[in-house]
Image 1 (tube, helix red, strand yellow):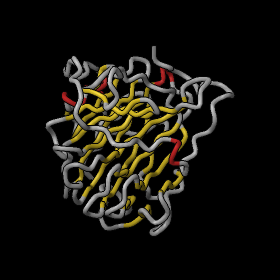
Image 2 (cartoon, rainbow, N blue to C red):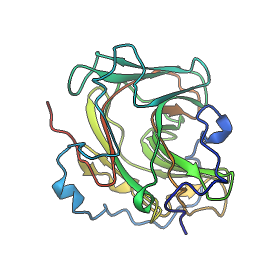
Image 3 (cartoon, rainbow, N blue to C red):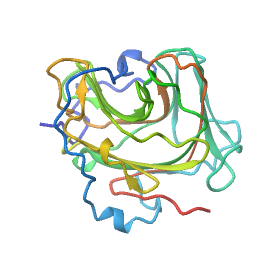
Length: 284
């Protein structure tokens, strides 16, 4: 059963964003057995009622309240190892208003990351939706596993953490879901690629109550990124079920598991986190 709900009690240590042992996944996507998974899009009335508004959300940030060149005030910046990237407000690409968040990651380094993070409140049913607008210059060449959206937490009463990740890479360079724990590194591959050179609306659902993940691009659910309890396979033999930890921390940005031959540049705007689907914002 999934560990839905709270933080797991006093025996659960705080998540340390600077500790490599605290959870950078090793890089899924290798060979393995194929899971028997249905890929039908999630049937939800939320998709018919969303407006793009962040009113009442767990978090909502359009980055307008920050000075150019500064770090975003609502978030903790997590860059690792030292010098691996940058996270700062700028005006080069904006979806709405006059500012957005610019994230860079250096090439030719493995397990490097440039994230913004925040602790999550105790979530009803251990479930939340997210939305962000992204502009990515280019994704790494194939054989580099990368993540953009990470939710993680410690399983109750243990020192073992788990992650739900959406990103992409490996052999095809396409979008990919990833499940990581200290005992598992699993994947679910898509035929779709992350759009580059334009603003793209990314939405996701991490449903810890049912051990499910769902992903939308510009309002369309990507069916082959839906993960109901298990994906395509895992590096470890005999490990298939994607049992969600209690989601305690959210990280958004960029992580490369293997060295990328190119630097990464992405911009982020209009981030929203809620217990219901938010939807894509209307074009300004």
